[in-house]
Amino acid sequence: MHEYDETTDDLAWAVFRYALNRIRMDPPLDGPLTVEQLRDAVGQTITRDGLGGDEALAVFADHLAPACISADHPRYLAFVPGAPSEAAALFDLVVGASSFCGTSWLDASGAVYAENQALRWISDLAGMPAEAGGCFVSGGTMGNLSALVAARDQAGRRSGRPQRWAVVVADSAHSSVASAAGVMDVDVLEAGTDDRRRLRGAAVSEAIEGRPAGTEVFAVVATAGTTNLGVVDALDEVGEAAAGAWFHVDGAYGCAAL
Image (cartoon, rainbow, N blue to C red; front, side):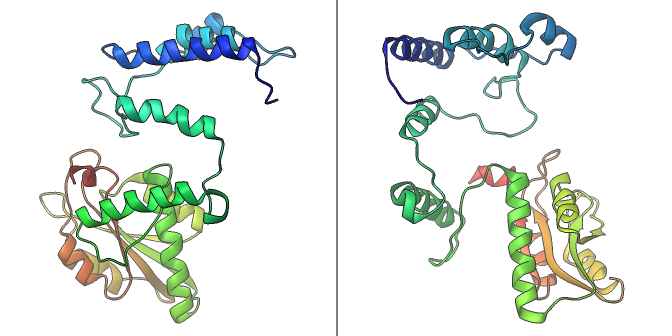
C-alpha cells in the first residue's frame, strides 16, 4: 500500500500540476449537473481493477470538479464552507502526506499544539479569558451539536436529569440547531425575534418561563450573524436572560468578521 515507485512519482507531479493550475487561475463558477448527466459523462468509477491514478484525476478534473460550484469564486455568496487561501490549499497536501491522526496529544502532540495556538489567537480576538479553550470541528453543524452535547452534560452533572431537556432558540436560528436537538432527543423552545429579526432577552425569558412542566432548559442559543441576513442577536440581553443555562453563540457565519 505504501510502496513508492515511478508510477507514484508521475501521479504526484500530475496532481501538483493540477493543483497549481487551479490556484493560479481565476476560479470558474461551474455548477451542478443532473444524475443522468454525470452518469453519461463518468459512468461507474468503482470497478474491480480500479481506474488508476491518472484516469481518476482526469475524471475529477474533466467531469466531477466542473459539476461543483467554486466557493472561491467572487460571485459565490451562498453557503460558507470556507474558501481557503493558496497557502492553505497547498498545506492540505502537506498535512495529508504526513499521515497523522490529530485526535489526542498522545498521537499528534505537534498538531494539537498548533491547533491550540490558533484557538488562542481566535479567543484573544473575541476577548475571551486566558482559560478559554476548544477544538476545531468540520463545520457549523458539528460545532452546534458539540456545544449542545457539552451543555447538556454540564446541566446533568449539576442538577440531574429532568423528564425532558429543552433548548431555547430563535425562529431565525440555523437549521442545524434543530437538527442537533433532534439527534440528541431534546425539545426546541422557539423564541420570536423583534422587527429587526434579532433575538432579545425578553423573548428568551418568556420561552423559559413558558416551558412545559417537567422540562428543564439546559441551553440558550443566539446567533452572531444569521446566514441569510447577517443579523446579530442582542447577545448581552440573551446571555443575561439565559439565567444559568449554557449560553451558546453560533458564530459560524458572522464571527468570521473577527
